[in-house]
Image 1 (cartoon, one colour):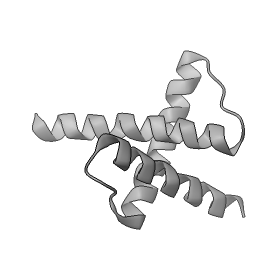
Image 2 (cartoon, rainbow, N blue to C red):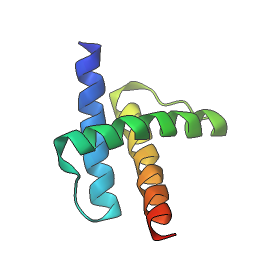
Image 3 (cartoon, one colour):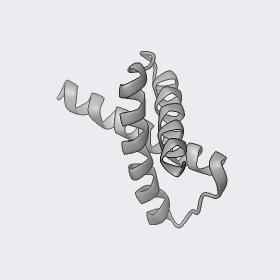
Image 4 (cartoon, one colour):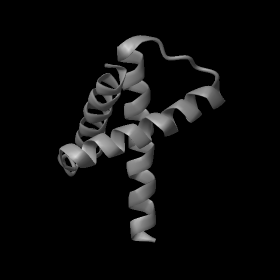
Length: 80
């Protein structure tokens, strides 16, 4: 059951990051991948800064921030 929540949070985070960064989403699978990788990046960033995220909402916020960083980095690499 936790794996389903993990995928659902990844989907929500990937979709939100796509909407925030413009250009829409990346499809269901793409949003899940962006959200999952974003959650890993967000977790590392939050740990580095010293912030702890609690609960489902905290996990979504952390994953969205990480996904935004991921999308921005990919766009910078694409234009380089």
